[in-house]
Length: 136
Image (cartoon, rainbow, N blue to C red; front, side):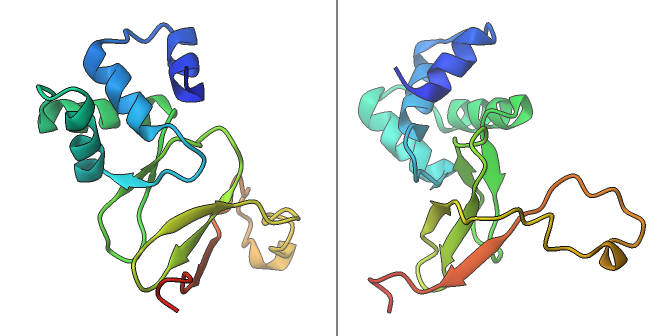
C-alpha cells in the first residue's frame, strides 16, 4: 500500500475504488503528473473513472494537504504526493519534467534579516531550472 493511501486511511478518508486508483497513480518519489495524466493512467486501471472524479479527488487531496499543487512557468498544474517530505523541485526548461531534490541547508537561513522587511517567514519555495539529459 502506498504512503499516500496509508496517510489517507489514517485520517479516516473514505477510500472508494476511484479514490484508491487516483492515490495509486500518484504514488512514487518523483511523480508530478497533470490532472489529465492522472486521468489517463487511472482509466487504464479503472475504465469507468470520470475526468470529473479525478479532478474532484485531486482537489480534495490538495485541500487535505496530502498532495501539493505545483505550477511552473504557466504550464499545467502538476500534483506532487510528497507533500509531507521536505524537498525542492528541479524543472527542465525544455520539456517541463519535474524532479524532487533535497539540497543541503535551510533555504530560510539564506534570507538575511534585513531582506525580510519585518515578515515572519514560515516557508520557502526554491525551484532549480535547467535542461534534463534528453533536452540538453
